[in-house]
Length: 222
Ligand SMILES: Cc1cc2nc3c(=O)[nH]c(=O)nc-3n(C[C@H](O)[C@H](O)[C@H](O)COP(=O)(O)O)c2cc1C
Image 1 (cartoon, rainbow, N blue to C red):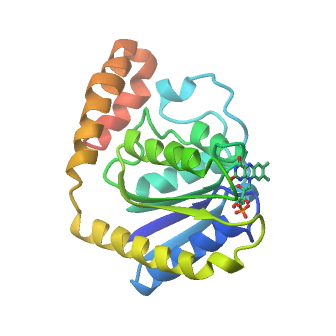
Image 2: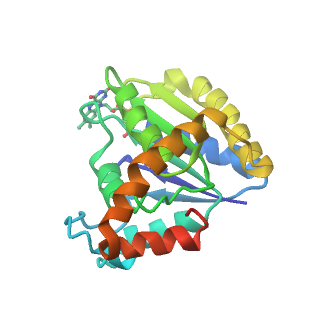
Image 3: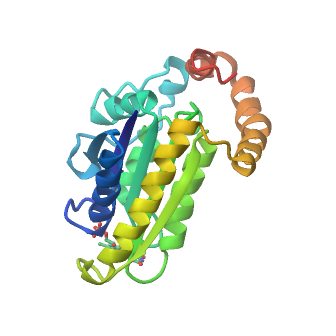
């Protein structure tokens, strides 16, 4: 069982990293094979909006973002964390969302996920919604979501809370993957989004989106 943890904070010692490491520790205790990725440290260009990936199935920019997207495709689970920047995800997380082939390619099909949003005053629920929507629209199943509110650079008052939430979330993720947990409401929501939104949109595009339909066929999505 392989789970990737992706820290969307440019700071690798902040509260987002702390929360993700607490989840990782619990997953390791369950015997899960984990990999921790710092988005702030990888080589990642911005998406330039050429849309060539829809035709070919891969981005023409051959950097770490493309490699990370391929790793996600092979993993069983994903933990996505971001601090709140101006009531949204961080810049590096947004870059990765744009580069990662998530929604159109249904990158998270059959994968179980945890989202983590941190902030110090207002807007972390907006951050969480961005991450949760990303998971659900991309075909993933949300095992748990963690919201952490703490003063900037000071998690001392919330460490116990982080550890408690991390233990609970990691357990849900582990058993979700092991037992292939069924989430009826999420499944229904995704069915509507995919069949009445994404699928018809892509099919109307024909050969321009051949790379997308090839991936769906390869992954048994459609
Ligand atoms: C550029 C910037 C914008 C921020 N905007 C918000 C915000 O809108 N709402 C909020 O609650 N916190 C905001 N914060 C605070 C961070 O979200 C918060 O301290 C977060 O936990 C930091 O995560 P980290 O320690 O993992 O880097 C902002 C911080 C920065 C650096």
